[in-house]
Length: 336
Ligand code: AHM
Ligand code: MG
Image (cartoon, rainbow, N blue to C red; front, top):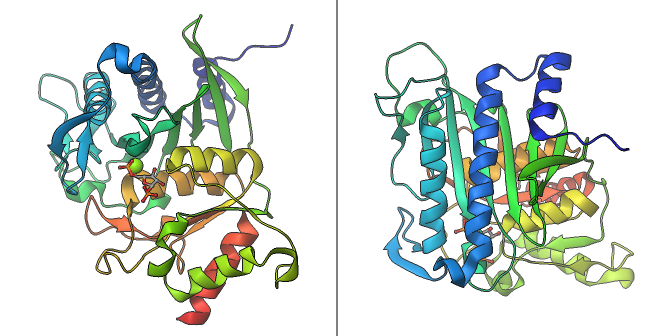
């Protein structure tokens, strides 16, 4: 019989063998994973659970919230408040940080999340996900503020995402490679289904929202035009295109078979560095992708080296197969 390894067992063994996962961090990851199971149940119920459609509210970035955005956010807050591992949480769906209430013990970690990524896909029954990032509260000062969260992606102690698709899958890194767990619904448990995931360095697949082409900067247009020229162009090979419009799903495909994902700066909102959020989307995905041998930049710099100046900061994103990311980045550097 093949050995069935649960998330708990995986984490305990990692802790024993590599000493990488302190007890508090293990507890925190397990609680996040449990919350994702609850979110998966709501996602699956769909119309039967009255979870589809808009909540008719706006988040801090001025985006209309879906009912599931709010449900997922509440599930994550409620699940993570009492465990004792956290000092505070921050979410794409909340204006400011959520400090652990006094009635619970405070821990040394900070949790950041995009509770429901790919919101535009909720109502159309396409894969969506939850993305999370874990930081350590640095220093021994009393209390916790937004400042404590403003650490570069390099400081992440763990990052992961859960994808609610045909299968519910959790992908996790604690800085020692990337592991994947599939939810066994009958048993209600996460089962290890992939270890040391590796993104091939080369690819023939790109992911970008082509409808924004007329708004792109020159290096992005140059790269995509070359891909589109296929065998007859400078790349000498045909490329395929995929765009799910759920970052979790696009990144999951890249982890599985390679590819390059881009959400670049564009002229629609020239003052914003990009659409995606550094702390809830780009940093955790960059950590996972790098741990799987891929690369992640904002076109010029490694995403994980960017120093955030505010919680809801946005960023331009190029990530995935290493050689392609390096090429896109080189085109940006040439242009600069
Ligand atoms: P969300 O967190 O509000 O769902 O927004 C992020 C999503 C990403 O998952 C995805 O890559 C992108 O927005 C899609 O944007 P667009 O609809 O502009 O193609
Ligand atoms: Mg998102």
